[in-house]
Length: 479
Ligand SMILES: [Zn+2]
Image: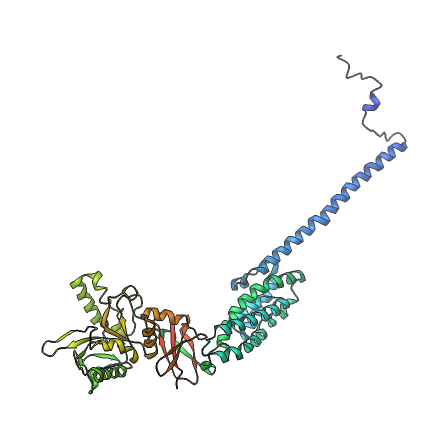
């Protein structure tokens, strides 16, 4: 057993031996066939490996690249991307940047920014058609039914034509050749929806500036460049605990100058904004004609910051800060600082004055003041909105149409300003009095030092800031 491995049985040796070629001996036919088979098998393995490398590995790289391009192009265009082009589209991005600069000079900034990023002709054509259609529909819906039927029929066509002409053609001509066919085909389908959505919004914005959806009274218009700071001035400025007053005594006039007045004054120094006094005098005249009373006393009109501070501090000493805040505004936050507000008392010769109450016959003033452009500023039950207890003696001038609307709808000034903010130039608020009609619209203040306000060329109007975010234009439609 010990020597068994060294001396295997002869009959086993040839069968267990691995194929071996002895090159010193002439090759037999079997050896040649064996070599040929080995070479063929090695070649076939190499061939198959090469095939996989060529036909699977390389195309996968291309596909992933194509996906990257599509996903980049399908992203919503963001202006900052123009400045930071992605690596796969450096050249395209550069072209787009150049074309956007060119087109932005010729068309509006917003539209050119968006459109110049889209590079294929197909995208341009689709988006310009779709967006113009949508903007036409939207704009015709948005325009006021009451007063802009004519404009909604006539003007959307103009806006469509203009937007389709001005949209991406210029930018796309240059860059379309550079774009790959694959990505442009796919992008044109995927991006057209997004583009049309964005363009439709922006085109409608632009069309507002292009007289396409404007109400009839603005078909002939002019633009006034207004100091944005002026939003703190005017008869519709909102002054409350959240909105301070920057107005301080400009254009005041003394009530004592009216020699024919049917009311008393606490002293000769009572002043109001000069635009308010004619309306106040007319109201007091009518009150006198109706009730025959002359004991209305104007206790306070304009109040300076220092006077307001003194009043506020004294009120805190008397009733504590929390309760004082419900009766007296802190300095800089009082309506009296505007010159548009006043308090009434009742004059009692020999005993000074007593408080004004909303009782007969004086309640005539509370019930009819809107006819003259005044509102009872702090109504009963609105403390949560106005921040003050009801004050039946405190009136505020806001102009006739606004006073009518607030009276008709039971709104505080805070609520009314909110209503106005929803009525832009395309959708003005129409207000009717017994004899007149007015259109009011809100123009948001620009971030820059000036704001361009669109105004009617053939109708009288008044501009007021809202002391919050923009301007209110009041147009008289009854000439
Ligand atoms: Zn007051």
